[in-house]
Image (cartoon, rainbow over all chains, first blue to last red; front, side, top):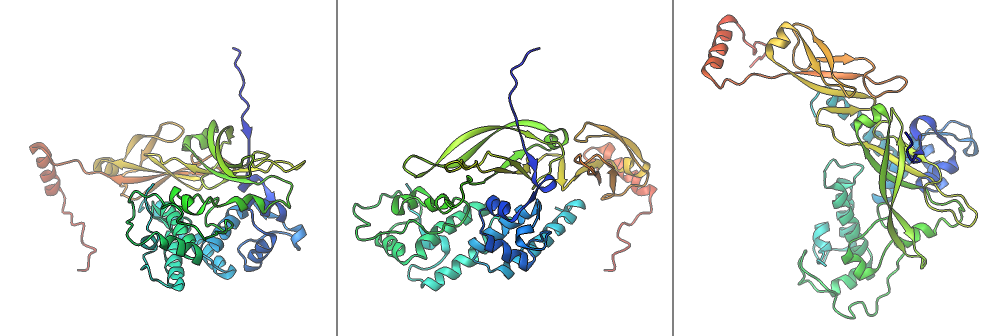
Length: 105
Length: 313
């Protein structure tokens, strides 16, 4: 049977298949390199590589960097505060997952 | 157009100081920030706050807004009096909270559209802007992979350099095994490049439509399975739905509520695949007929059962 074939765009799952350079991460979340460097210094992001030129960020860094950017911009939180907020949000997410597992939503 | 009472939005008096306004905004912004709040209205509330703050934190805009007088009530039909803004010149380059913040018609009538600068400040990059959007898919799409047409509202610049939104439809392959919260990168589908520059990328954040039976947690999936008391006590083989179709599930005798049965590898596919957890619930048959009540009385006589022995009182 002949059918008109639609072309579907294939995407890459960022969290599994993608690593980002500093430039790519900045481009992907519209952040300035200076902000990203500060978040790395504060431990919000943990790239591999010994210098900013060689940094390689895991795909999950995209979500974290966007979250950090929104928190610092919308709530005027400084970088150590952003780092603390992200740690606490991670803890809340882990606790909520535990609650959900036991069916106590 | 409805009047918006920005003082009411921030919960401050009309004579509040700039510091009062800042404090009120910060407190409410922390409470309703969509990344932090679980309130279902958080996003809408946060947008309102951002708009109110954009006006009241700026002394010029605040004075102009106050010119309208204090007689207006929130929600009242409103048209600005002619010439109300004579003598004011507003900067259109305020940083607006939120991605490409869209303020209300009320705001835009008074102060003009915001956000033009969001595109302008990236001129140093020849590559187009990367765009982000959120797409809702079904849990079943993650199990099987799917091809979906999704429509997106994208900001774009028109010939005059103004920000407009236009709708476009993309046909996208949803890869098997994708999980909620993950991002799909579609190369070259973001904003157009400048000059010879390549187009930006489009990032799609995946979220699942709520399913009445299954809930996903990372790669694992959970199902609540109600059992009759005798099925839990005596054991049973129960036809149980899974996202891949029903399976015959053996309930061991002596099962209690809350017990989880793990169906290994039947969560979201991947390497490793997730697991499906069946959480047992015990449902009591209603005592709504004489024969049912008699059955409960027989049960009571048959057992010397006190479920409260562990309570210390």
